[in-house]
Image (cartoon, rainbow, N blue to C red; front, side, top):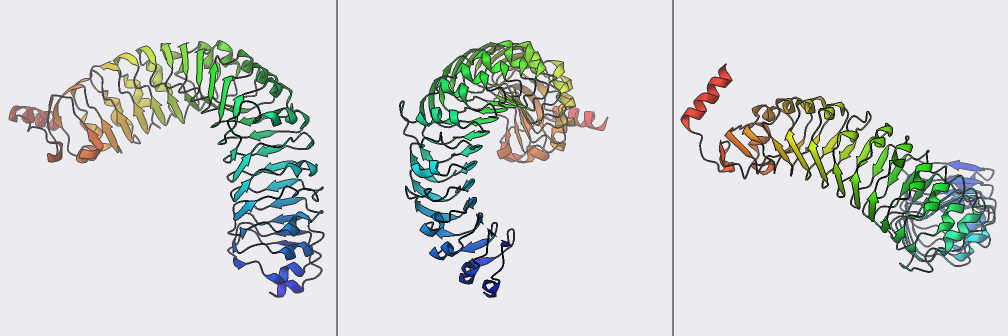
Length: 484
């Protein structure tokens, strides 16, 4: 409590500690305070009206605490405030419509991760110095106000609210006002109720814009060709909407693009070779659409890709073009398409890949031995194809493999016993033509983690598998092989 006697104190920095309890009332006597930072603690209680005594306060940061209640009216009258950071607390109630009338110097507003309700106050445009608005993970509703007077606005984060009304006319009126925000760098509108066609006015947004995140809304219609004019764009995400028609070729002009995600829409047509222009891409997700045709050879130019998901489309042809991309490490998912031909030997060039999924296509031939060169593999999904011959011996060299699914193929021969010596947590080899004795160790010792059904000539194994015992002569042959 004695801290209130430091009447000349101008800056108090106590973040990243383990303070508990309420903010002491004596602190509001520090009328010389310009900066008060109490973030990342465990403080509780509410902010009292006495905060209004700190007339020259410029920074008020109490994020990452357990503070609750409504924001006191006195805080809105601190005209010297530059930073108001209340994020990740338990504040609630709606914000008054006149909240920003007396905050002409406010530059950073952080209200995310609370329980605020109601609309964003239209008076926010009076805080004309605002450069950052972050109000995600609340319960804000209604339209976004016209923000055209916020000429210094650099980032706008509104994700995970209830903004918009899935309206075709009013939800995106504020898009046009953003043309006046010439410093805008990042726009995040994900997980809201915005609807309607994306307007062509987006082409007149800030030339500094690097990130647009619009996923999980109700947008429909075509992706605007005008987006190709935003040459600084590095991240574009529009997943889980109702966007249709073709991917505009103008996106090929965005040579700074690093992250492109358009999954779970209704996009159709082909991936034209423009994709090869995006040589800086490290994440490309076009999954769960209606795209068709062959994957263009130009995708080999995207050498920086670490994540590629083309699953659940209508792609056809061979898959050799996507093999050998040198930095693929997180995911290569080509599942649920109509790819044909062999799994090429070039698959062995994916030495850093963590998850490889080519399931539910029309691939034929053997599983190449070079799969054993993919030493970082943890998840390998090859089910639902027409692979033949034996399970390759090289699979046993993948010591970090956790999940292996070879089901619904035409594999024959005996089960590779060395699979019991690696770190497998799940194995599915059902519906093939495998025969012989089942091993008893490793993943084979857990019946719930092993699926073997649909192979009519398997025998032995642990009792929970309920398979017939192996014939004596078969067991003798296996013992001879083991001893030799």
